Length: 535
Image: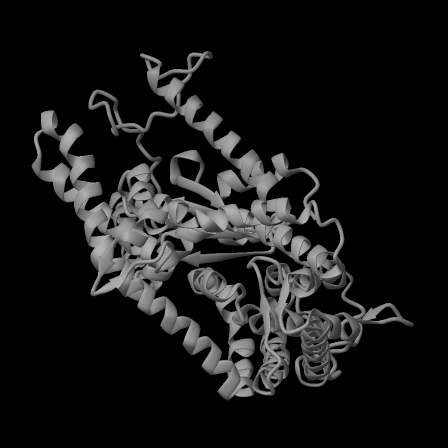
């Protein structure tokens, strides 16, 4: 656990290349997300060793430091403050006319970089050994620079696949909305619970209004974030997307059918904002400055707005309906198999940070049906992870460092935040990550089986998982729904524990590194490898 977010931020900043190397800062529920100018300047090994850092993930242009829930927000605020202070200090140094600091020493200016009158320092002569040839220092530096550039280009090309780029952009649009989705979802769960219990009838309408207002206008926020992500003006993206939820669209007819407010939902808003961004860029590239200020916003709203009304809303509505139909068919027809696959593959998606790309699908299902049937199935992956971590805790009883990590990360895992356990426990050990996926698959199959039998389990909001999802469950009667979901969690815990305990660790992994009676290192010929470190 991180006790001092400022100290953690101060440790992270130089390890990611300093203020000049950081181009953007954001965070989600568990990760500090950084945009970097030069990936090669990051010291991965030292960064992973910083206390409180649970792991790192590189996803295209985003470098993500996993810190855990609650902690990441405080560290991000401290990181941004240090970043701003570092940039101000750099600007002050550059503004100093003679390039020197207050002590009269050189202020860090590289010889020959900006001033041709500065004489480069001469390296001391080194006498080569007999029969050897020493390459000039400049040639060696150039070779290293070329090699670094080639490695960077290969890494960038490997991560810049069209699918990864699209998923990263979708995640960047919706991740900032998660806090509001969680807050409104929990309020909606409280309102539903009070309604079912018939308590406080005068308060429940107010709670319903609070929880529903954001969902009614979520298209505007999606449009704002989409335009910002694609390089347009955010407020124009919000203005174009607002037409999706405007009540007056009921008077508009497209393809012989009257439109409905909210038709197409977040998918329609996303498409409208992307279109608006391209229209805006086209106008700004062709209109002179005197006309740009008037015509560009007008044409952006007019052209993209009309196309959204007469084409995109209808098309997005059809796609959204197809998503809902497919989700219902998937679970009611092939529920056990679908749950097995979805529950088993979700942890790798979380590991790669690609699970955020599912937010539009969950949001579409909530808009259509009032709940998403996919989230409870996917939540079983976290149950398998908890069971696997418990088995590691029991087997590796002599690894005090790993057991401490498990104790600190397990509460978050029970509440559905699996990244601390992924990066702190199962993934570094290797095999327990796979056995955790097996536990998630078993829990998903359990929930999917009951969906085939007619008991649908859904969630009225996204964000919470694990035990935190109980207040948000919907579908049939709450008691039956909660019983099925709870049974899935217990199945995931049990299978994840048993498979990890018997197959997830090498033979002898739980034995002490030294003989407890003699206090001597274990002989090399004694079976059983030393337990792996969590880092």
